[in-house]
Length: 459
Image (cartoon, rainbow, N blue to C red):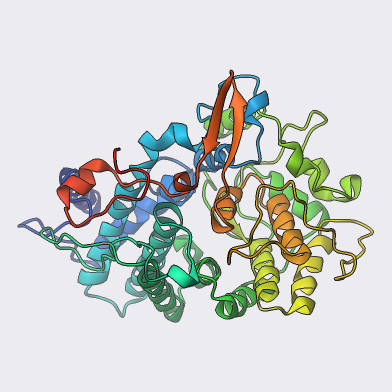
């Protein structure tokens, strides 16, 4: 009861401050947590939300509702042919009003991690170590999400010019931090995740174990085009969590709840299935784009083809909100390709395909299909025209991570291409600036040092 009251008090303080100073909460007479158990309360509430798939932290990390929203933003579902408006999001431009709050909401979570990291006294107890490691890991994950959503896509040539976000490591109500550059943000994320990894937290009750931290570190290096480090970390994760296949893969993909197969992390492992099943039903109002269907050239021999789609090409895949080792395999394949190590790139591309396609024949450089001119993505993350090898890896990623909210960020990472569709005689265009979500206007008014993202200056 004491811990619950303590958390509620801090939550109320945070909410009162959120409108005018979402970045920080400072102690003005209120009692900060004193024991390990008190500090654990700040973390356990978020972990509970993640497990239940309810509102709160899970919306930041990726609820099943958020995954569907991202799929609707991308080119995976055909909105032009939708049969009802059960899913309200037509495209990313119709959801700017809600997306602008994500920046504020991330910092409301970061506030709790900063309270713990700054003030936890008993850092050498077993519980203290778990709380501290989890706080560093979760803060790193929050900033990773901020980077992907609220910053332009990373570019090595412009890394010191692209705006990052305020790297807030301590709480101070008077602080009005500026946006640094995206390279500074990458370094901040890497530092947090490295710290969590060194602390070697393995208790799965705290969800953000050392392996989950490594997976997010691989994602961070990959997003920042640090191919060598992405390979090093992703390989370590993949070796520990080998790819599954056959019935084990199918069970993992279709499971509505719980951890299984090659999953390292997942939201919604408990809780009510009512809302989840409603979203599954609503997804069937939008057929899958034929550009995705056509990538399954092996059709019946590819377990994903029969698992993901019905005869009318509506999705039958469960909504995944997770981190899987298959993504690490794809990170390895693409990272090696960018380093011109074609042998290893093919090795990991073929490894994934061999686990999904029966009677599989491995690709060689000579048998890779040509990069399609009709694809939305025209260039890779470095701005280079797609080679057959990179195109094959990106296509495999699109297939494998369908309905897991990945495609939207892949579009952003690889050139942020503009594309459009027509519905009810109206043309909806995903313009380049829409890949980066806006900052809430009230936050910019409260902190004159914040700068709005390009394209939203009149928001």
